[in-house]
Length: 199
Image 1 (cartoon, rainbow, N blue to C red):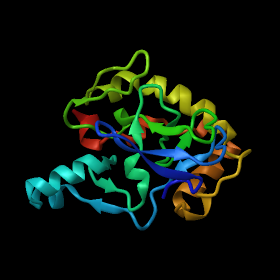
Image 2 (cartoon, one colour):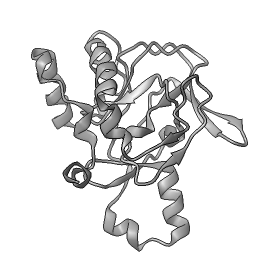
Image 3 (tube, rainbow, N blue to C red):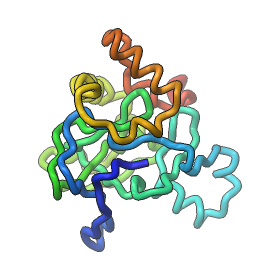
Image 4 (tube, rainbow, N blue to C red):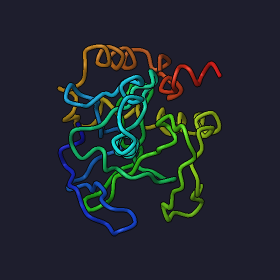
């Protein structure tokens, strides 16, 4: 489920749609939670789909650490990549705002955390755009991503969290542990596909 203070906006023919804030979303706000309504496609199921359907799943999903492709039921699937994104996945599975996000601002994400299996051409339009996302980006950038997430996750307990009620109990317990022991922070590397970690 995506943050409620957002709307879907058509950008252009090249990009398609994007998700934009309709209210101020402060740094540390949870912007996305994997909830019970998400469509989870296991690797063996994905292999059995027709190529046309596989293409749609690939376009609108992210791959978790178990190799499961997760397709959001709401417009979370339309969040675009940006090399200077304002939200990012955490090692806990949810995403948070890593900067203050203002009304009318597009909410963007780091696709490098999505366990890419093939290079992906991007054009985020920002200075320093990587141009192509690579499966190896996870290993190259995860320490930089951790630096951003660990800074912002400190605000988690100080800002409103409308998505907190739909989080699973295991994640809530991990968050409560983080509150008591900041050193228990879980790296974004926990999101990397288990088989790719071993490679």
